[in-house]
Image 1 (cartoon, rainbow, N blue to C red):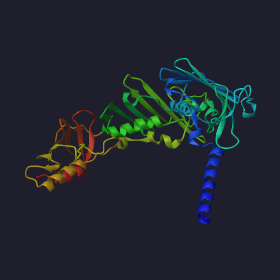
Image 2: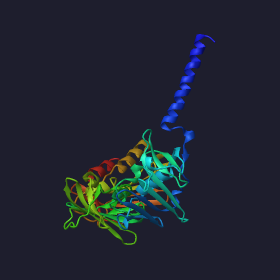
Image 3: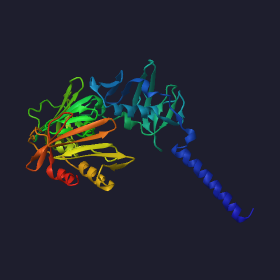
Image 4: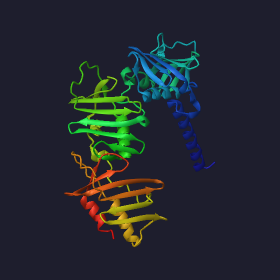
Length: 413
């Protein structure tokens, strides 16, 4: 064997040895890791963690989890419980370090052990695990299995098991099924904004149609607001600075009340009387007004989805049709027809605090068709620099800037 060959063989042996040594030293060899147990998390009905200073007990009834120790009958954060269960279900054994008859004291598994975990399944079967110290090398935790053997588990199990019990409490300000929402009301220094409806039909009291996508954003945004800290406060908010009310399909009203800013955050009271602080920025969605939730285009024309637009402005009328993706109208070039549809689609809504006059003398109207569905808006005569408009499906009148309609009227023939 020549010098180069011997060098290559020698280097290969060194690499093989290093690979073996690294796998042994950090326990990361995939082949050496085995699941600690088979644990269907959906079947867990009770979790008990006995800790040095307290005992945490989580109970599931039907699909609802609660914290029964050390805080009695407290609603919990479902995501936090799921995270704990998934962590426990995914535990992997790196290696067996002691037999059942060996002393567990050196591993933090004396009597009692450092931590004890008990999981009760819907079948009534219980899985137990004694948890000891962190391993001195690598990234693991000692534990004693039900067969008595001491194993090194992958990861720091203490991080999941030693968190403050209060961290399991439900930190959501509001909890509801968004599909059941029929109204959302925001009250604050600038007045009351109320959106009501369901599905794609939403209205703003005093302002006309609401944009269903923006209402949905508000509803989901309210569900995302969470307490930073839940506090044991005795006093009530005598006069809240803001409120957010969610009304459900059965008439239930969930009211969240916002108080003053403090160095810890903004004081907030939940509908179930939990009290605490929330980061002020998370409450900015409560400051929305009609221009945030209301429709911004008066007629709801979509150039790619609408099929027909019938428009009357004063003594001028035209019907525009979209066929094979092209807009056309009798007596119009295609480019002119497209310009007119675009101008009508760009007609906006002006929101002001005072309600506009009702549409009593009809000056015009626009009907927009999409398949078999249509929406019609009646237009009143010019008043200063706006036209009153009203959706014929319902809702209060709203304002349309005259300059927007004038831009479309100049394209009519």
